[in-house]
Length: 260
Image (cartoon, rainbow, N blue to C red; front, side, top):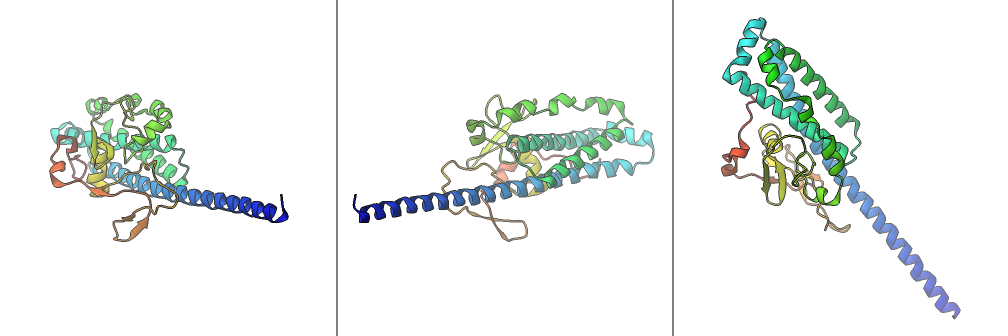
């Protein structure tokens, strides 16, 4: 091999190494942006869940007499209200499972989960004024998604995940030990209660937190418009559910905005 050929060969090898380094940095940057988008959306969801449960606590706290509190809770409107708040808490537990399944580490998310747990425990204390209503609450085991958390790490499960909580919507991976209707819209998949919570309390645009396996390093993720009107550089895919979909039985409005 001539000196010239050896020099050219070394140059090609160096270019290949540099190209791989650039590709590696590009993939790392893309993964970072995707993770930031996931955390931002999950935080919005948890903030609204915490607000809903704290609002329920405030409503019951304003009722000074236990007998009146019990009467309100036992009314049809009161039981429907508590049922809606319970479904909101169920979504929180599903989001917690999705965070664990994806290995997302963020202190603000963890603090929000702790705050939600405190608010939920306080609500149960108020419900003790009406034992019949307290007994109507689902058992703690129905909120457990630890088994589904482990399953959700598989490649197929990640490809078929709820756009809100990140847990799988595949048959047998329903996110919680609880029967759940599933919805699909423009390629996004959702547990019905996750979609209900998002549309009623967070935003009129449903998020899609799953990432297409075809996403390339060189492709630029679509801009996402945040509630304040600014474009966020993320990999979320926003879409709006048409009004007629809101009338679907699976999109029944949760009774969480008004006092019982």
